[in-house]
Length: 611
Image (cartoon, rainbow, N blue to C red; front, side, top):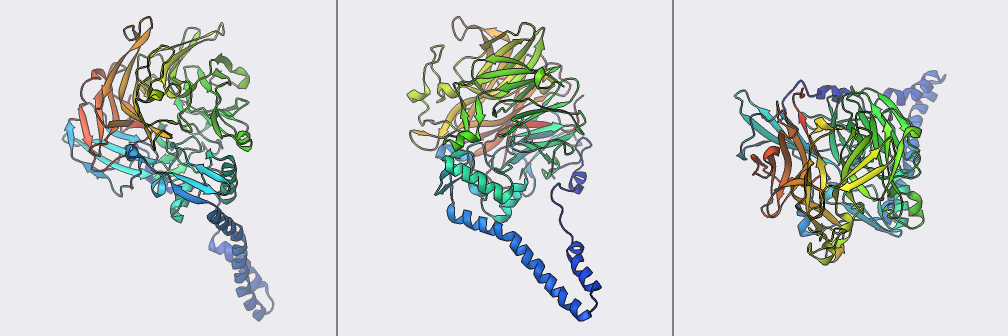
C-alpha cells in the first residue's frame, strides 16, 4: 500500500466529512412543499388532484426556462468558437499530459540507496497536466485566443518515503488531478468549456471574458497547478488565480478551498511565506480590478486572518512572490502588468512595460498602505525571490532578475546556438543555452537602507548560465543564510522553426555560496562562488526541493530531491543529491514505471514535524 496513517498528517476523514462551500441544494421535501400546501388546503379534492400534476408540470417548465439562457449560450459558443489542440514539438514531448494512477505504485528499482537519516514523508510536485490531451486555442469570428504555457489543470505527483519495521526503506508513487470546481465541470462535460482568455486577439479575449463569466460566473479556470505548501499541519495546492485547495496527503484527494474562515475572498499567491519565529503565514492576492494588491497575515494555527490591507497600488502588477523578514513584508512592484483596458485598446492582457517603473516595498508585518517604505529601482522582471533578511539598518533582498518576462511567452530561435541566443551582455560575455538577453535570469541583490532611504544593487552571478526555480533550506526563510540552490536553464524548446513560443527546460542544478566571493569568472567582478550538478545529455529536471537531514547541524546538511526525465530513454526518476557533496553523483536514483511530465514547484512534507 502507498498511503500509511500518520499522526502528523491531518485526517482525511475529517476533510471529507466537511460540507463544500457554495449554493445549497434544494431537498426533495422542499421542492414538493408548495404542491403539498396547495393540495392540502384545497376545499375540493378533485381540484387538489388536478393541481398536483399541474404544479409538477409548472416546476418542469420553470426549470426549462431557467436553463434556457445557459443552453442558448452553450449553443452560441459551440457554433461560434472552434477549439484546437496546441501541437507539441518533438523536443516538448515530456510536456504532454499523462493519465491519473488509480492506485499507488510500489517502486522497486532504486539505484544507490536512500540515506538512513533521510526523513520519512512525501516529496510532492505540482504541474500542468491539461485535460483532453493538450493546451487549447480557439478560433472564431472574433479572432484567435490561446492558453499560455503556464496554464493547464494541476496534477500532483507524489513519492512516498516510508521506513519499515526492519528500518529498510520502501518507496511508492501516486499522482492525482487537483479536483477544482472548474476541473469537475469540464470533466463531467467531457470537453473543454472555458474559452482561453489571456493571450490572443483583443476581441477574442474580450469575448472569452464575457462568455466565460455569463456561463460559469468567472472568466478563467481554477487551474491550481503551480505550487504545494504546508501551513499548520495542512497541505494545499495553489495557483495564484484562485484560492488554495486542501490536499489529503494519504491519497491526494482534494478537499475544500481554503478561504481562511470566509475572510479571504480574492486570489491567493502561489508563494506564501512563513514568517520567522512567529510562524504566521504572509499572503497576498492580486486582481485585475481594484484593489489591485492586498496583503494578508494568517495566524500560525491557520484558523484566522489576523491582518488584511489594501496597498492602494495604481496598477495590477503580476507579482508572483513575496518576501518576509523578522519584522517586515517585502513587496515587489514590477512592471509586468495585467490591464483589461489595454485589451480594449487592442493590446495584450499581460505585458512587460519596459519603460515603466519598478520599486520594492518594505512594510511592517501589521502595517498599512501608508506605512510602506518604497524604494525606486531600475525596471526589471522577477518571478522568484531567494530570500530577504535584516542586517543592521538595511533590508537585503535577493532574487532571480531578468530584463524581460517569459510570461506570457517569449519568441526565440529554434537553434539554441543561433545568434539570437548568443547576444552580448553588458559584461561583453556571450549568453549561452539559447536564452536571449531579455529572458536571462541572474541572481541579484538589493540593499535597502531604512534609515537613509538609499538603495544599492549588484549581480551576484554571471552570464554563463541562466537560473530559475530557486530553493533554500526553509528553516532560514526571512533570516540571514549562506546557501541557495537553483535549476539551470539548459534550453528553451521551440514548437516550430524560426520564432515561436517556448517552454524552458533545466539540465542541472547550481549551488550558490552567498557569503563567498569568487573573482575567477570575470576579471574585475565580484561574483559569488558556485558549484554545478549536471544531469547529462537529454536529461532535465523540475520541482526541486531541499530536504534537511534528520539531526543535521549545518544549513546545507541535507539533500536536493528532484524529478528528472531522460528524453532519450523516456524514463522518469527522482534523484537524491547530497547538498554537501553537490558535484558528486546522486546518492539514489528512484525509477518510476511510467513517465512523469515536467512541472513547476515541489516540496517535501515531513511525516513527523521537525523539531
